[in-house]
Image 1 (cartoon, rainbow, N blue to C red):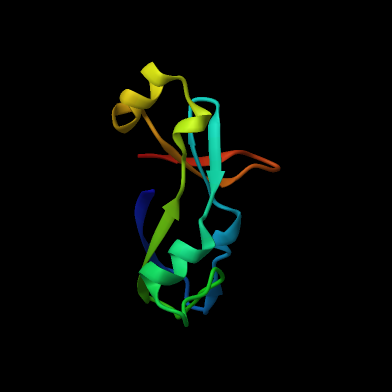
Image 2: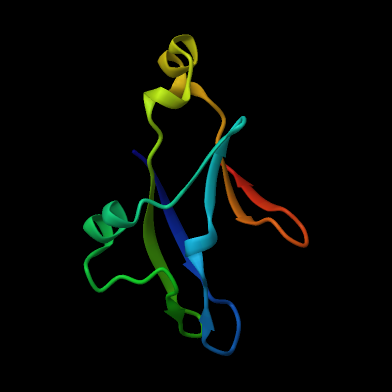
Length: 100
């Protein structure tokens, strides 16, 4: 399981909602969404994939993404931890990513 520690600060004067359930972790052609069971295990049962963030508030979420050996060739799997990863925040109308 790959875990992304996401620190989010609301710099707006109003409360905002961030929908993280659409976030995808990608490496090359491999992509995966958030592992829901691991998300609750890491963030607590009361955690939400759509947190409300007050003005000037910062929150931290652990976003787990599960990749399996079956999705890669043996040589690619051995080097898996050295791969470049991107957190995809939005796909449409414009792809928005954070390179990790």
